[in-house]
Length: 192
Image (tube, rainbow, N blue to C red; front, side, top):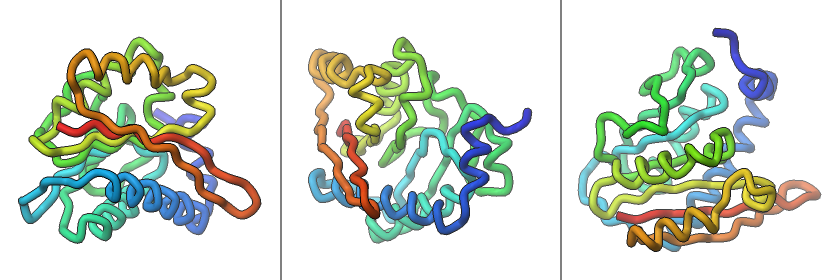
């Protein structure tokens, strides 16, 4: 299967542009980890990444989590198509609306992932992410401002469902200055 238009856009970006995107992700993750304390006692943290736009980001994800957590990580990247990720370690073809395999995980991470799913499939991913966590683990979802303001990702609806199911969660606004513009968004973290 040839790469999608989305993946081709990533492939066309320079290594420098990909590195900048990775540094933004690092800032986002630092913000969430400063607000939520992880209770991980194991020497190696198991991390599931939901979707990945470019294979160069796989190594960045591993590096970022190791730097922030100050420990080794076992990183598994799940994507419904994996041709664009060939050559990287820990890649698994999987439809994330189904339960995540090889669980439990310390962290499940979805960066602007839900917007690619129809609204009726998003809750399954949120719930599967939560169910795949170890006790004390955290599922992290990052959204661009346009995703939840446009209704592509109905955050309020998912927050109501989490409250009903007694899932502990935290919502944090994001705002980072990049050159002359601001990147705005939201972090949603679910803790088991």
